[in-house]
Amino acid sequence: ERVGVKPIIAWGFILSAVAVFAQAGAIAAGSSVFLFIGFVALGVVGAAADVAINVSGAALEQAMGKTVMPMLHAGFSVGTFVGVGIGAVGTTVNVSLVFQLAVLAVITSTVAVVATRSISESNGGPAEKSNVVSSTPLWKTPLVLALGGGIFAITLAEGASNDWLVLALVDDYGESRTNGAIAYAVLMVAMIVTRMIGGRISDRLGRARTLQAFAGIGA
Image (cartoon, rainbow, N blue to C red; front, side):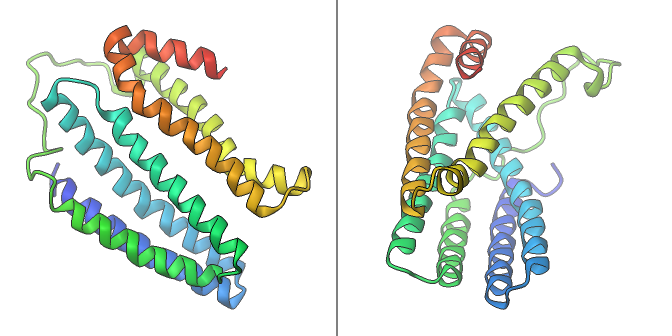
């Protein structure tokens, strides 16, 4: 609210690129400690940029009067899918991981900073204050706690598939790293399709019913 979403997004991606460069250096030097530090730094600045992007997306959704957040999140899945493809090709032709990280850090941060210019200055700014003031803290509100618990469970399941799918296929089933990347790409395609049509489903069924339905399917 103090500085707006644009500088947070821009600097978040710039610092993310710096963190990825640090990771590349750690890999080249064979230092697991500095690689871990790079991951922590990337997590912090990346999360800050991610929050700002979602705040901006929520403001855009309110201004448009229809559900667009799932479609915006589909862009994240598309980027992941492209990254998986690049990684699979790089692994197949034996391109250095350090080189891949360095090049992708420059490209992704540049694209993100340039794209940030199209975000409205008022997008994601302070919301209008409501006349209704609740004395109950947010962390004690049953609805907030229920949503938080549900989001935690869904994110845990998604994160487990993101982190362990490729490792399980390669280490436990003896598949090649390329096949592991292809399997991960299949997961990303499923996420892209669901997110692209999720907004329309939500507008038709309502957000509560859509959440219940997809949570049930996922379970």
